Image (cartoon, rainbow, N blue to C red; front, top):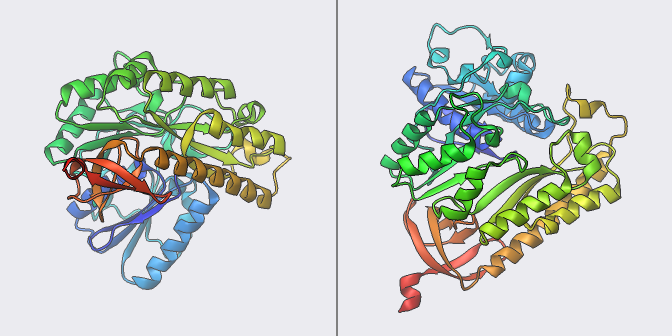
Amino acid sequence: MSEEQTQDQGAAPRVVTFGCRLNAYESEVMRANAAAAGLNDAIFFNTCAVTAEAERQARQAIRKARRENPDARIIVTGCAAQVDPGRYAAMPEVDQVLGNEEKLRPESFLPEATERVLVNDIMSVTETAGHLIDGLKDRARAFVQVQNGCDHRCTFCIIPFGRGNSRSVPIGEVVRQVQALVANGYKEVVLSGVDITSYGPDLPGKPSLGQMVRRLLALVPDLPRLRISSIDCIEMDDDLFRLIAEEPRLMPHLHLSLQAGDDMILKRMKRRHMRDEAIALTDRLRAIRPDVVFGADLIAGFPTETEEMFRNTLDIVDDCGLTYLHVFPYSERQGTPAARIPNQVPKAERKERARRLREKGEERFAAYLKGRIGKTERVLVEKDGEGRTEGFAPAAVSGNPGDLVEVVITGTDGHILTARPVAECAA
């Protein structure tokens, strides 16, 4: 997950979103429900609990919003509010706190919903609805929630207590959502969830993620591009492997939930894969889809991590051929087993190791961009003259947001590709 914060300006009600793609999707559901209820003066904060820094940023933003909007109604929701509603209810700037289930219910935004704290026991939630949205504001690609929650209990992670147990959106609901988005002009859809590769066991027939994706692509033939968000490298099913090998509409970009590259640290994290399994997965995927590009989440400075253990994580960037890194210095989360491990790595060392990982990631990313020079790519134009290739590399291109353009890559500055339309190169 990312700690990126996004804020949509100029629309009422306003929604400030922290964290993951699932939050971004749910913010659109909230925006529509709040607008229907007439909450045009409200400011919503959809928070993230993945790190202490994400929560700090949210609280800072809430206080700033109150200073700048003294008469606005401020409503806080998301994972941080779900995990610790009392903390946000105690903030004088906050008018109401909603849980992760309540924020998606239209009735939570009606005038009679006056209770200051509406937060259910998230572990009691057994279904995830397929909320229909028209798209995401100012984005050329759309995110569709297909799964929520997590049944695993990694020792560093608080998210299951913010999202509840794993539950899946029925295939028919997913198909209807994607059909609606394609009808509205979207050419790329990203399937999102908390633990997306756990999709299906709670549904009739127990379809796997790969089976769902296969049916989705068959039933929405006009969708040009489909992406899968972060996946667990131990849970991929045979159908998904076959689709990656054979389906050109499934984009060759996979983000892996690795977290570490040292076996002892992986065990202490209570992850379900070992180092060699991660390397074997990337080798297998590269063999069946040579153009596949990998990203990964990595944590630096987990409790008990020695320099040698950290070097194993640093080395896995090369061993797995990773291109896009999401790096987090380890952050203690109250209520998680890892926070009680006595041998905590000093915070300064965590930050230094995270810096080294990011530096390694920047080198790999720049090398990948350089290797694309001279290649022909299809780019989805987003905004401000920039788009994304099928491998998710940023490219400077001309065109209208939502256009798919075929270009030849002409260069890079190490951060973004430059390109010319194929027609110009032929001329």
